[in-house]
Length: 222
Image (cartoon, rainbow, N blue to C red):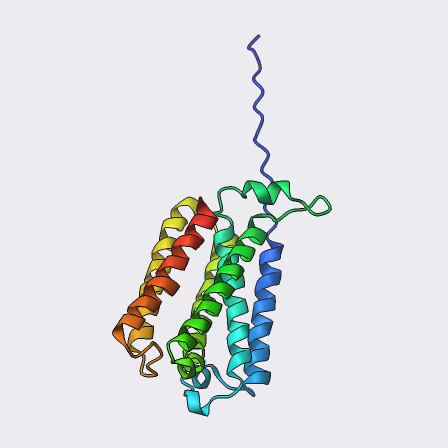
């Protein structure tokens, strides 16, 4: 009588990604509110091509696009965080601590807030304080477009059969392209949003663009 062999199929626990949908729906509602209430039912073309001197409510628009940008980029990169830092795991509140998304959101939010604060101080310390308003008005348009792309990437990443390991290389390439494009966008934009003197431009790019990204990379992936 032949010996019977028992094969046990590995149990696959499906991922529950409902939280991604809820956050993205919240982001979409924020943009709908921005376009219909703050921008008074402006269409996408008018919003993106709007000139600074014809605009209004620039600060609320910037805050909303910043929130959506931080949320979407945190969703996308959170699953690539290798391990949570020891101090996060050991310091729990009522038995809870940050998961990978919470940690990524906290780090990216702190990074964005500090870089913005130092940017504000930098512009005012060199006597270009008036350019700061034009700077964040212009960056709002770019952040809006990038956040829409990030929403699409989040949907593809979590709800389509994508090889997560291979996709990481493409995400890194995408963010490198965005960074280079952003620097060129800031340097050659017709609003002339960077400081006038070349050494201040160089200082801004090195200290408030490149250096913070290296620190962010170290906090998330090392």
